Length: 370
Image 1 (cartoon, rainbow, N blue to C red):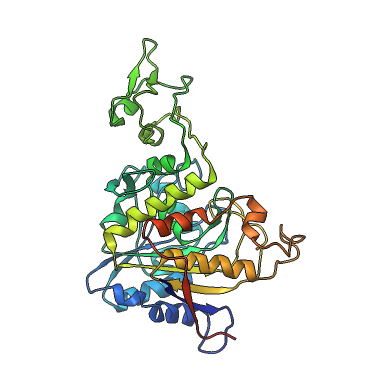
Image 2 (cartoon, rainbow, N blue to C red; image 1 turned 45 degrees about the horizontal axis):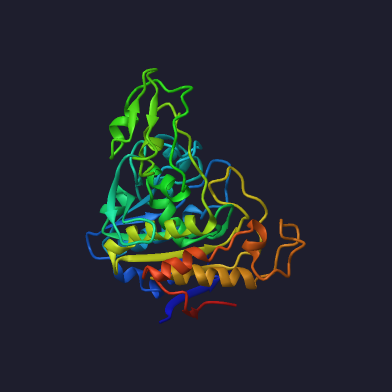
């Protein structure tokens, strides 16, 4: 069964600028209708790593905030902390980065709440029925909200090939320990140099797999370890290294299962808007953004995140390549993101469809296009 996907391009004129178009697609897609008076509405965005300016501009996000308020909802902007050590590893750095990138109450009209708390420890273990997981670690503010709206910047990604709504929801709403679960099939090991024997990892391990050896260094029993990533996320000395070892299908499928953990408890109360603009080769987690791969295409929305991503992929692949981008000499490739990152970026959509999150079949409804 196909899902309805709404699209408007980047053409603009008097009384029909991009702010007007953002408002129109929010209303036409029916996302406004999922909000009831008093609902706490989590608007999931990516504030951008410092140095990257390809993220969704705050004025467009403010339009969504205003529409949520018009329906009586109580919106807040949110994102979860990162697993890697960047400018968004904890809530303080994360908020300061958001401010530097132009996100504040004055610019967006809503408070910013870091979804998983000060150090990424505020999350809920949500039961699911997946291929890889039967429980996923979803950031607390996202889980406890009444409504979930994902505003996603479409771009390339060095692991996924492509980043859209599904990646923004799954990886973006997982707590750091959950991000470790998605990123690795390898169980963690302690790097003894730097370990202070503080016992933090021992206290956080849910299965008692960690002990202190005679030299006062932590040791993880690989036979007992379940690979949950708690010790990686909580070690204050960062002496339990992040493992990134997995294959493209596994990390995408795991991320789809985390997306299921976000969406399933909120059936009928989720909406998804993808912005096909500044379509950079790499993720907004990078501290830079290179020349876009294709011209700005438009805004696309649906209540189905699988469909909105499939439509986004199709539009990018049908668009001409910008000559001086990294794909400048590959303008005739059928799959632009696969040509760039050598990954099949459809695993997350196929698995999302199997999980019942949405459909890769869609009906495209266009309006206000040139």
